[in-house]
Length: 390
Ligand SMILES: [Zn+2]
Image (cartoon, rainbow, N blue to C red):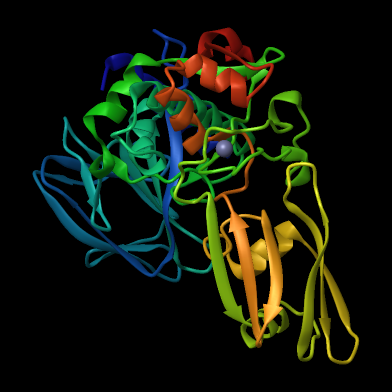
């Protein structure tokens, strides 16, 4: 870690002592460097090890609680603080810093940067990795695209993921973390997930982000759109031309282009009743309307007593589970007591279609062309050019 970066991290820590967080800027590149990624949540205890010199500090302070040549310990939550091995500490959390190039080992994965363990009000623990933006991207790309794909897709993905991460960091300044490490943000696997090609894509696009109208673009992306990307306004309060959806004929080779899911009606009845709906024996499930991208807008579920429930496609996907119902682009029928769902695509459908980007790169398109296609009106620019907006 450079002297400059170290001083910026310190600055960030001091700011967070006062209950807010600012993006730390590297004075050399003015690139925001520190991203806070939630790795674990609601844990009773967490095992941590470092195979090199380490320091443990009180959270949001410079007070060193422990240091040594190697670390292997368990941290758990108590009534008033945390247990660090056999030592009880009456404080809200701790920060673990590995010295030099050592990585911190948690939950079967290695992490660059620092690790914060914070006690929640319910006594359980949350684990946050404080990491530089590009170090974070090294651990994201492998999970988001195949590291064997052409370099131009990997570059497009690096720029989109960098923009998305910065946007989330800006939105979550007052929260305990910026991003989660699962599919609800961007899947992040720590340094265990780094590969040569994905690291190269992050390095050659260093400092590049997507901007629209002079501001950072929330560059959403997804696995496969299956024909047309979705208007972000149908899902969230994002209404801007780059996220209104485009036709996509490039993702036909995706393994997620078409799929079928079958589930017994009693399973749907159970899910509905667990979510608070009053429903008897289901007799029909019909799609009422689809939106301009071909995704389900509204659907109706009826029971044998004539009770009718109307759900949006988004609510239905949430009810079934986003991995079980891969997208809201589907047709539905009821046969012999089962629900048959003929679906297309995987993901929310907004922004760049990753399999489409792969298709475009396979036809010789460059990263910037891919991004401009999926985010019409957006431009690739440097973080420097929007630093006053971060
Ligand atoms: Zn597509």
